[in-house]
Length: 113
Image (cartoon, rainbow, N blue to C red; front, top):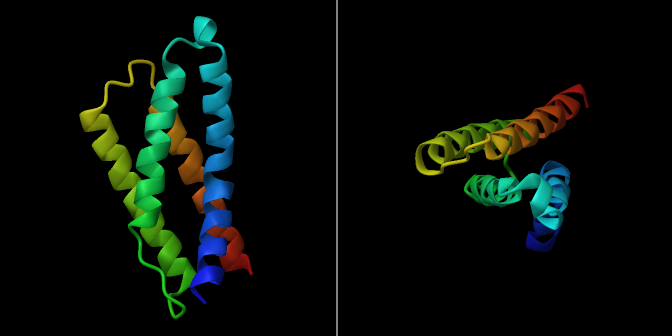
């Protein structure tokens, strides 16, 4: 059962973070154009992934409740990021917004069944 949970979590994280990882790669590949914005995207991704892993999930966990917990944890992580990191151009904050939008999309799709 743990392997199945791990695969599901990996898939969820890919849905939420792969677009952000692609964005970070683009920015890091052309620093002369993007400056240090790729760095801030990568830092934000770390905060987001940590937030997702902090929400416990068991075979009896209600998925909607879990997703709501993920949203809450990512929101707290975003607040922490804003307090602790510079992010002068706001690209890290935008990373949180993109990831949160995808989590809300998964939650909506789950509720619609």
